[in-house]
Image 1 (cartoon, one colour):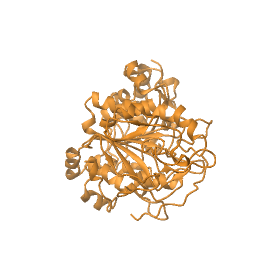
Image 2 (tube, one colour):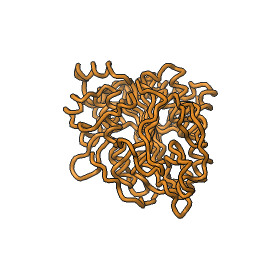
Image 3 (tube, one colour):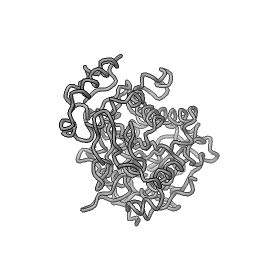
Image 4 (cartoon, one colour):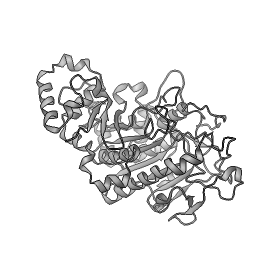
Length: 447
């Protein structure tokens, strides 16, 4: 069998921020829960949760809301852009012509058009979007995925997996809110990459001596290597590895883990439906991980997921070429892959137990800039929600006639986080005990 496992922007915002208030180590061949054994109350909360898994789809770089899910066909030409609006299956709701598959499936998800955030630069807004708190000196709060990981505990597969080549960043630095923060690296996401061919790579493996792509060429040689390692590896050697390396090794001893990571087990038709892109195959891998019991899967577009310039990934940060990239690259890839994910979850009976959330860190300027593109806009943007008790076919909130500001209750990043926690069974008692997302409001209109 061909090897499936391998070791392996710089535009500044032009707008001011919106002023909105708001335990033991692993042993070789076996895993110990990252957060220790779940308390009985926490285990009961997990069993009562509407969602057993969350797939959090992160459109890094920030897509334009006017050119996708909140078109303004009656706005002046300097705002509305060149794309026509099309009807959806939801009466009275229109998307742009760039999203025909999702328009025909609008009855399978709900749309929020009144998201706002507190910062107009990528890393700070990214931190807000992933943990609900602003960057600052002192305390570093945990991400949404880290909270879920603490509540659910560990298993054969990590409780919080991030799919992508790296953590979200611009050309200056990464966002800070993606991991465990003050809770420590035990609650950081486990990073897994997936390319357009569906080949999976685990960056932590590149530091584990002898676990090279050549030695992972097929199942028999893999298991022989792992058996040898179990016999030869003493506790002192194992404990010199960092947690990510320990986790990578432990995953490779688990047939269940290996199966979840093997996209070759999917039919060619299914893989083609998602699209032969890194983003598409990553969404398919996310579905497999949710099906295998991973509680929180964060799927990155990007870093370098669909980069259009070598080693410089601006993602959806379309200060230039917005009206070329969206119709010719970004929206076709997204429309196909995200529609496939929704269909797949429905067809497999997973949608009732899987929460899907999709968004970027902010929106883009309603008014087109002097480079015939759009800049950063934290004052208004969209998010998509499906599964786990989310009522489908709804539109929550509205923006003004130019798409500049919400004319309904603004939905801030903490509200996104607490809504995810509500679906995942992390109740107000646990949030108060852990001092996270205490003052946010669930987006009740979705339920």
